Image (cartoon, rainbow over all chains, first blue to last red; front, side):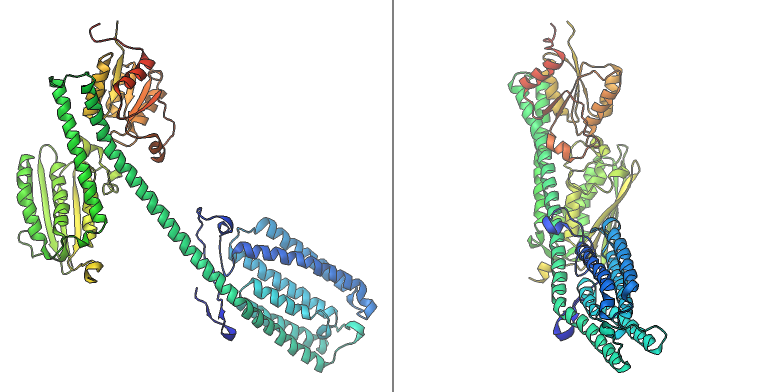
Length: 490
Length: 132
């Protein structure tokens, strides 16, 4: 919502409803959020209740006027004003009931605004009826129309109030015209005087001027506060959102640290217990069993080092390796060819056939890349495909597709696959499927996280499709012309 | 005198070997590398005590095995020790389906051999040296 320029240069509020996000992190009055226009719904609710209480005074005033009116020459006031007082009391009871039991402070702003408009309309109608019975355009009650307009402009949007002002003036002019044309009976005002057509025309003109004037003036005075209220609300909403994001980030960081600590503690616990067993003499370090335990312990130390190295790699990428040794015009074909040469013996040993589908493709040249990170990413994906192939072998196909803007590398295996419920999570840190653990005991659970980080660092995306027992296809899409903003900016 | 039998379930073979070495000094030891192996072993021949890791094939596998044992009439009286690297606060944060973890004792890795024998002894008796 943008405040536009209003009368005498003040920004005018063109209020539209804003749904305020609920939050648990704010305290005090700010917890009372809910829907908002230029004020909160609960503020409008409070004002409407105050207005309803004020209406009891009007009821008392009408009742008193009905009793005292004839004494000052207003012959029609009794019992007419008593009936109007009864009507006002009745609809006020309905409004009070509605505000207390149906439309509470938590109600949507739009519904409360409807209640406010209904109150204004019924009040103005009651007021015009009272004006009719107390002397028409000479009625002493007529100024209360202006009072209502001022209160209404404070409570609801100005555009609605201008509409109500127009309707009221139109209805009042119609009433006075009907009285002078004899369609409606004319009642005398105080002192029993009936106004002339000329004075009534003047009163009507003054009423129109005053009604529109008071809406204009009240809006001029209050629009600055309304605008500030809106700006304050927008700022509060943005701050609240930023706070929520910050809390979420902290929570994720804390979770990641805890998971990392656990992953380090687990092998450390095993290593400590193994050494203790040997120190306490439960096993002879020189015995076969003791040597087996020592060998296992050494492997746990290796896995601990792997985790630490992978964590460091991940941290380096997340800290922004764009400043790391990057290069221009990096060939994906060359990177894949180098990985292929190194992976071929590993594949042969695992009885897996490596099939390249990129030799005769065109050259996929990246404008910018960090070659070691790209090598790590593709190496990891290809080695995973070999590692998690079934024991009876199979094929691993590495295909490269190129168009004008992107390169796509697809690595497909016929291996053990990933269970459906874990396919969305395998790019998260330390997530390893049970079948992967069975197939390959060693693994940090960080490889695919690093792959994702490396690909994202190059402006690309990585995804996978898998069927347990049938195989996995990992797809990496890289934009050819991506250069990080910090490199462009120098 | 018959030595009590203890089933140790943990997916870390080196840790199982270490704990097994400590316990064999006074008890008979059987091992399992995941929850389903542990349940099968208990069904085949109920041990006197079960020691469970928490995170094996999946995040709360040890807790699930403990609940299964408690809910079965045959195995509900077998004492259970949860022996894991997962600390208590973390357990709660993992939002395990149910907070009910029916273990008789909770120990964290790494474990001191004397402490392990003291806790196990409290649940199934002191056992006896091999061959006695």
